[in-house]
Amino acid sequence: MERHFHEELRQLKNKLLEMSFKVEGVVAKSCEALFARDEKLALEVIQEEASINYLEIEIDEKGHSFFALSQPMALDLRLAMMILKINTDLERMADHAVNIAEKTLFLLKEPPVPLGDHLEKMAEMVQKMLREALDSFLREDTELALSVLKKDDEVDDGNSNFYYFISELMEREPAAVNAGINLLMISHNLERIADLANNVAEDVIYLKQGREVKHRIHLRENTRFEASTSGPSDA
Image 1 (tube, rainbow, N blue to C red):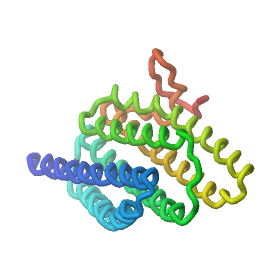
Image 2 (image 1 turned 120 degrees about the vertical axis):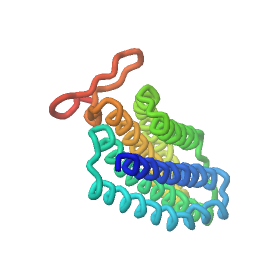
Image 3 (image 1 turned 180 degrees about the vertical axis):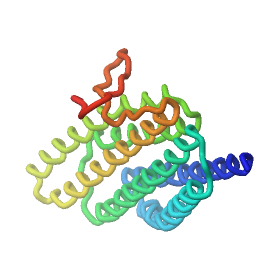
Image 4 (image 1 turned 90 degrees about the vertical axis):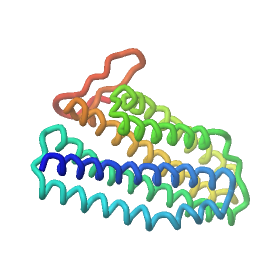
């Protein structure tokens, strides 16, 4: 019975890894489509949405069946819970990647506008956060998970800088307003993917240490990470 129980959990984790690879792929492809102005890649991202949604439902059903038919120990219970939470976060990341691809298709119908380097740097950081968050899950590495959380401010700053950059552009060039609005939406989608990567990193810490870190204090370089224990954080 115990052997069957662990095999079920192993299969569930492997399914989540499959989901992880798919989502990391569509996020990368949506960014490439945007910066290369590649219609074919954007359409491929949109077409992959159905298979990702199907896999998300499959993992969710297997996970809830696992809870219903098993009596997991504390650590296994945390792992199963984490898998279900990450599964949901991954599906949402894929939704944001599809949004980026759809906005890219719109932008291809508009005259190109200058992007500076704000958005591309932000996209690179978001993809790095996602990759490291998923690696931290695969390795059950809390140090790597913490490094993901420390990158969040950089993405937020990139989002703010791009907002001001595009706002000024739209003020100077009214013809760029339609493109600018869609670019701001893309920036928001990237920022949300970073937030969801943070969720994955937080879940890895919960798995290994049994503590929630969603209401964490501000992370500073070379300072010890502390999880808040009560009330809202002052971050």
